[in-house]
Length: 358
Image (cartoon, rainbow, N blue to C red; front, top):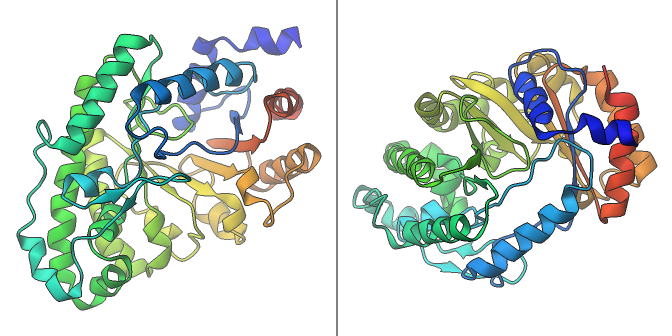
């Protein structure tokens, strides 16, 4: 056990993570054991900076006892709909998950996309609420801060434009869809740059668990991709994700669903620095291996919330992890699993070290 602790200074973890993002050899496959249930921007936390800070500090105190590759930090936690809200969408707080967002656009008023204005990145009320949280955290904690969760332009568009109607509009009204996506892309780039400017001690270029250094690129959530054909995703997804990637020197694309239909198209994204996928939702491992493994970093998640798709007791998680490594190899592989208690997490992480060393 002492050997495990001695290996886990932050500097060394950071070096291993950095080299893994660059597809360079590392002495161990990096992994994270998260403690569920997952934390959302619920009504309890959305407007209460101290409650959110307390949650983060408590989580850090417990999680740091697990000897994995997670590094203590604070999440801003304002939900996936923050950019849509900045465009004017009303939001409703929720007791169980991120705020619900009411769309502004549908097929009937699609011409209104031309009237939408890109939010003023310094003075928009939704953004300013986040900036106040950044200031509060920086005054009351020395922990580094992540960016808030950044949706892809497609995800934000599907919140601003009624979800089902938006999917249909990519075929029926492409001109209006492109107009909306162009504005959202500008807004996303501006918003991320402003956060980077305001956060004095930036932990990561993303909201997820993994450390993403600034020179690697930005993590975005692109769950809508799985509903699109390769050609539609190339036109409405890859195009705008590539513009964001160019602005930040790279991009890591997160998608929770089954990406088998679009994963090859995702690989066309300019400055792609990684794909972050929910593995239990992707039953066709061969297409991931052939299209992604060894070509760009592959972040694979398999969590307690996936129960029913896979069995994740500690023994099963170890066997599942070994199967992943045997199938995909270790080059550029990041592993992200979860348990329900910190004691389980400590035990699982210690066992992982026994077979993840190169």
